[in-house]
Amino acid sequence: MSQVDSFMVGSSLPARGFYIFGRTVVVGITRLLCRPTVIGRENIPTEGAFVLAPVHRSYIDTPLAAAVTRRRLRFMGKDSMWKWRPFGWVLSALGAFPVTRGTADREALKRCVAVLDGGDPLVLFPEGERKDGPVVQQLFDGAAFVAIKAGVPIVPLGIGGSDQAWSRGKKLPRFAKCVLIVGEPIQTSVSDNGKIARSNVREVTATLHAELQRLYDEARK
Image (cartoon, rainbow, N blue to C red; front, side, top):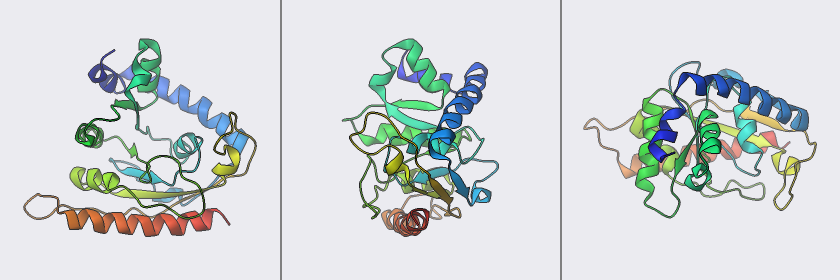
């Protein structure tokens, strides 16, 4: 399956049906393991695209993010995971789409904007890979850039306890209570000439960082 095919299959009717089934199973297992409490669910837009931006401390953050809304979420994944066609179809049906690591980030950003332009919410971890500790690390500008480019809001998500549920170096998760706090959407806009100013991206990223730290602190209490 090509990257283009796997990117598009996630929008097919069978894939959407499989997503409902897959989400039910994955979120159900996650709820048994983490007993998540979701605060601020009303801050998730009920229609239209948005970027969901969680803190990232555990592998289980991805299914936890899916637990905050019944809306179909999209995720990025390493393109190597699509090499086996059946598994690639499953990943795409579950909302993932492939990006190539080690190449220009421009292609990945284009795919993210395409997802948002199609009306689907997109999950981006602005810290990048998993981090450790109570401090939200420096954020990449990608989440702010694609949100501004697509003209959609960013919804920050603090996740507390996921590092206990599946800590770094552990092969399997364990039972642990998790708290998810959804922040108010951060609105974005482009300049009058339609161009994206670097200062605008930095400003949105700084706002997101401050809000994520606040939510993460609250979720960890």
